Image (cartoon, rainbow, N blue to C red; front, top):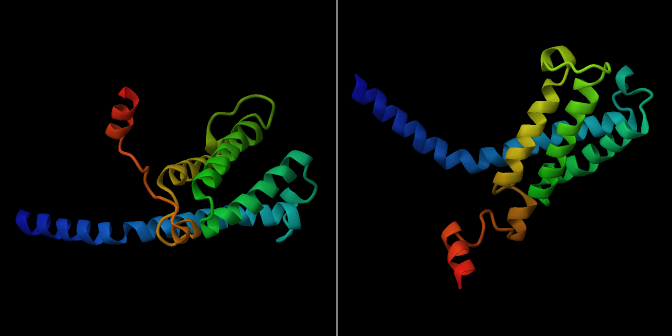
Amino acid sequence: MVGAFAESTMNLDRIGAAYQPYMLSLFRFITGLLLFQYGVAKIFKFPALPYFADIPPLIITAGALELVVGGLLMIGLFTRISAFILSGQMAFAYFLGHMFKSGEPVFLPLINGGTAAILFCFACLYLSISGGGPLSVDAAMGVPRRPRHSREAQFTGAAE
């Protein structure tokens, strides 16, 4: 019984490993799409949401970033830098827009409404490290998915 379970787990691992790069591309696209929709709502007021009806200039700037850089993330162009910028923006959004919204710090995301900002921050941070996957403009242009030199090569080159 245990042997059959271990064998089925190994089969699932092989299947998962085969589809992992494509799931990374799907994850990148969906993350970019969700951020893009926030930019559309803030800049173009579509859909019309009361929360984004009369927004200050800082939120308009955030919306412009979400619109433009979220669009870049969707198509997978400049994925690593785009995701890094959005990760920083989401960290900023959490601390400024959620945690200190009332003037006094409210640390729990369930209370301050910052759950999505935290999740977007770490999703984008992951994408800034992992890249856009095989279904991206970066991949089509031949942007390397991994550093050209291994860590060992970096250290041996420094010693010369």
